[in-house]
Length: 454
Ligand SMILES: Cc1cc2nc3c(=O)[nH]c(=O)nc-3n(C[C@H](O)[C@H](O)[C@H](O)COP(=O)(O)OP(=O)(O)OC[C@H]3O[C@@H](n4cnc5c(N)ncnc54)[C@H](O)[C@@H]3O)c2cc1C
Image (tube, rainbow, N blue to C red; front, top):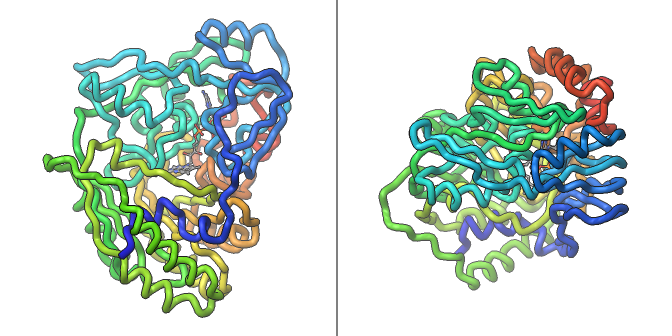
């Protein structure tokens, strides 16, 4: 029998079709130039003139005020889009990664922007706090994740940027700016694409530590869609991973619990069973795949684990891929998903990665993908890193547009300023603020010039 966690950790067929990249991307360390940089998927590369990793904010201020030329902040390099590449200097704030302070009264914590999400949970736990939500993985930095409006699952939760109560940003000229709840511009700085300055610390709204129970099942996609709205309200987190060329989806419900921790690592024989079953699937052309995928899906047994919140909310993704994700207004989510799945079948797209379908609460950020008056459904498609993602993503992207989709800033999209302006009422305000804080365009690279129409 196959375990759903195993299924996702192995990211479908990547392991079986020999596509695992041997070289692993890692956060650039402060080494002398020219050390090439690449992102997690290997799809984006650059040869920066150098890397600067300040030990203190004062060092960063000094560096920025005494130098000229392009700079780009980099987090963990987990964005798929070319947000980071530069031939100037990369700013790596991995030494500004402390838990700086906590407020018991306000249930907030101030953290260095370079801290990895995975390091926040244990540090907060010692201070009687926990993050409200996390994305699928926790390798990203806090500043990098919020810069692209990285989100988790749950209709009651905005993106991580929605938990940011205040932040400190150092402009390309070396000015130190603190943005608080009273400043309208905090809503720009919370999702900034690294285009306003270097974010060195952020204060997050948290809660007391809690445990979660995750329940994994398999269900027909149509039946999940029918009950999605109700289930999204009933569970703390609810999402599905629709299988391609199949009627089925993997379904994940997560709820708070007082139950005892029970989170054993998957058994090795489950991995072997998984491998054998998927090898058959991989060797089958898309047009003949459905009965096999459906049969495999029907074998996946329900499972349940309980653990501390941060150990349940984020996962391990072993195999490299590229991803496109758009958020569409909630009312359009199901139809958009249906059209994508239908198109994959009709066009016989040879893709084995499941999609991901989840709800995200609206927020007030200027250019976050879920800003506005309506909550959003976020829909992701994936392609193994060694494959050319363009034919598949180019086929699906217009479907997202048709349903009023907005792209995830960290995931592949082809939009430029002319289209983006229409998607965000405050896009013009963001462009003006960007110009004010970075009049010389030091923080711009080719991708951001296209995005902001510079
Ligand atoms: C396997 C995988 C799973 C993922 N799962 C999810 C998910 O569940 N939900 C989701 O929404 N996204 C997800 N993502 C996307 C990812 O969370 C975002 O792309 C995120 O921005 C990456 O964070 P990072 O620290 O790697 O930043 P980077 O990719 O290095 O940088 C992202 C942006 O942040 C800017 N930046 C970095 N540091 C700073 C700083 N100190 N100050 C100002 N700007 C800065 C950069 O210039 C860039 O514009 C996933 C990505 C991968 C590879």
